[in-house]
Image (cartoon, rainbow, N blue to C red):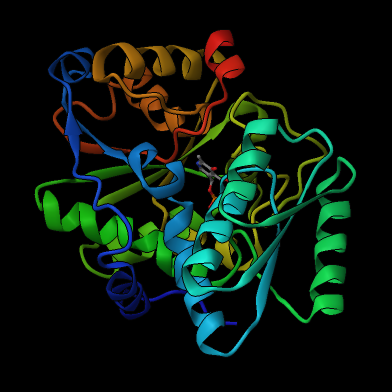
Length: 316
Ligand SMILES: Cc1ncc(COP(=O)(O)O)c(C=O)c1O
């Protein structure tokens, strides 16, 4: 399997044109003042389906549809499942989403509203994955992975191209890391266009798989994870995403859940955005680290999603 390239990301950008939102960079004078440098935000919380995931899902499903598939299957409790359901409907394909028995009702309803069939299966991701592969075989559908796939990473990489096009003066981009698809795409787009722009990955302290992998010099699988950032609590990076991250990502840093909560509240009160905890992690680091390593820099924090159920908003 190959990794994404500037060309594959440009191809994805053409496919996505007119389908998804461009999400222009947002600014807040009070947040920039708090940070102490020029800080802007890439608001993927305002994206179609409420997160960046539609970029990769649409790119992958368009490939699968062109190859003649009748349907797609994925295993995801959250944003990827919704995005695959949306893309499948766009191309007239059937979609089957396997979710954990603990999945919030709002997320199940969103996938069903896009026409997908939702099946509940266990609580462990390995159980869901196994069931999804079984369904793919039984139904003759194609499995759409959440991050470790060149078409998925290329779709996510279109965010990197948009940032460079809109703000050529940017010198640092902050990206959250779950399985690593988002940062693999963005860092490829940026480093293969403007190698001088720094890409920094942000993880919760309780799910520091990329941070630990870099420290230990190989891809590690954590024994467990714990964070309010539910999109970032993957146990390990993918094989492909780990290799891209080691090639292109300059630094990997961590934030605490308390810092994420504070960032959630600041984004809500200053920018009037609802950003889910995974999407607020970059702002958490930007503001906590603001006065030191980033002083004098021109920084974009990727706000990767906004799918927060009302109970989560209340608890934050
Ligand atoms: C809102 C949000 N941000 C970030 C991520 C992490 O993306 P990736 O798994 O591609 O690293 C996810 C993954 O589900 C997510 O839902």
